[in-house]
Image (cartoon, rainbow, N blue to C red; front, side):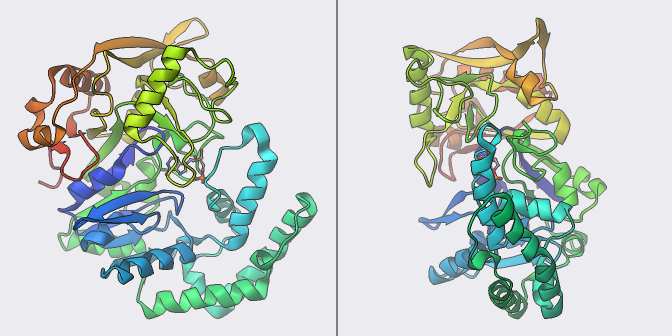
Length: 454
Ligand code: IMP
């Protein structure tokens, strides 16, 4: 059977922790979209591993699969595998032959195009994700399977690279180097192809996973980013270029919707919001320069609100892992979650980080929006409409900071009562049961209410 893990908000909901906890019972963990734009830290046997591409299950002795819906940078992939090997692990990673390859010109163009877009820039991770998916849709991409065949690889590069070079030089007036050189790319990527082949890493993803399921294995399908970053269901154009929502789990692995639909689809919810990048955020607290639309850092959002934002940001460690830049933060947004629940068909919720809000006198939730004089309960379809929405808040009494590790040991009833009231409000509004509650960053700090594999 399958269990699908989906971010219900804007990424960084703590999916890795849930994959970790439930993944114990899984034999295979497959990612179905995205690439090295995702970042997760795995702690195993007291050691910390920072990964952006290799599925975290591979650190724990599971088979990690990068599905056909992923975009794969072979350089990142082999760097991560080599680092894990140097640290004594033997990760078993398979890559779909239908997955698309991120090439150096994709990364270069990601940076160039973001700089050109100004107000429309999504604040991308500049890993070449968008340009690679563009080439996939434009039917000029290079797939993992193409790296295994020298003639096909050369033919693909000879067609596409001159176009990319002209784009960079003639449209954007940029100098190009090795990243746009056919011979250099051919030599380098052919070597990656040989290594993928020698190490027996490539698979026909759908067939591979279906055979495992038929043999009785438990398969976990792991989404990266979150539903509001989904190219179809998110805050377009401030989105990633793939489908983190559960539909992506079937298209991005080659398993049928009826197969994925027989298993659980678990929505990972963070108890408040955080956002890297631009776009509307009706429940935002305070603001961050260059990310919050129309934010004036001189004026700010008022002393109390900025202080609250800083407190949540500090407690939750809401600073970019690479840049250290503050992330935008806000109260939980129920219209966003109702939209995600419908689009994904969640069967269960894992609600994380309730410990981060501990100690506040009052915890608020954006219950609905006021939109052009009307009360609405879900997210409107255009981003401009979303930008006009004002959150209508509900208020909850805060809960104390407690020994969360002890709470995790003692189970759901040990969660402070006011926090349970908050959790149950979310579950009732979304008409979806709570499967797990994250009460701290550690692997042991999760209250498990339901195990989908049992
Ligand atoms: P891209 O995926 O690099 O193209 O970036 C597109 C948008 O998605 C930007 O707003 C990024 O900040 C956001 N994004 C991409 N990956 C993540 C993630 O793992 N967590 C949170 N935001 C992300």
